[in-house]
Image 1 (cartoon, rainbow, N blue to C red):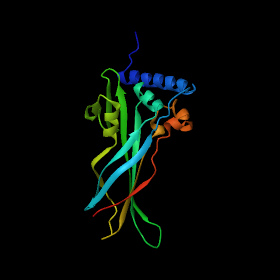
Image 2: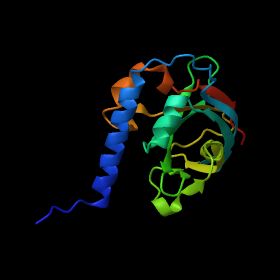
Image 3: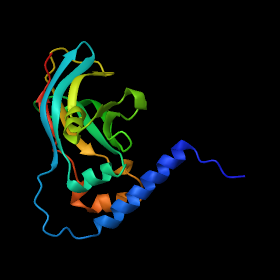
Image 4: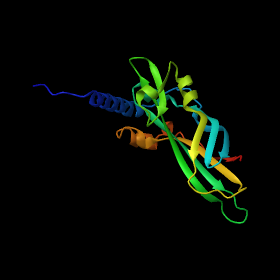
Length: 201
C-alpha cells in the first residue's frame, strides 16, 4: 500500500529543497554584481499612551538583499521581528524599563498564484494579505497602523516615557540548513539600529 504524504509534509519538503538550493548557490562568487543598497531602518514612529495601552503608528523602511529576495522567490518564508521597549526616563539614574514587546511578521511567496503573502505569524493563511509585487508587500510589512499594546505595570502620573524600536530579520526562523550561511553572510544581516521616540500622553 503506498504511503500517504500530507500537504504539510509536501510543503516542508519543498522548503527544505529550496533551502538546499540557496545554500549551494550562496557558495558561488558574485562576479560583476552591481552594488545594491539594502537594509532595515525605522522610519517614523508615533507612540501614545491611552490609559494603560500603548498605541503605536509609524513605518519601517525595508529593503532586501538579492539573496534574500531569491530565497523568498524559491518558497522560503522569512520572519521579521519588531522589538519595542518602553522606558520611564529618570534624570539621576538609569531609565526604568517598564514593558517589552516583540511583534512578529512573515513574508512568503506563493508560486502557484504568483502572490506575495504578508501577515502576522499567528494569523491563519486566509487572514494574510496578498500582493502582486515585492515592493507592495514590503510596504505593507513595514506599516505599523494602530498597533495596541497593553501595559501590565502601573504608570507613574506625568512620567516622562520613551519608546525604543528596532526591526530585524529572524535568522532562527529560517530552515535549519540555511541558518549557518545566514549567520555568517552579510546578505542576511538585516537589522536596524535602535531608535528612541518620545511617548505622548
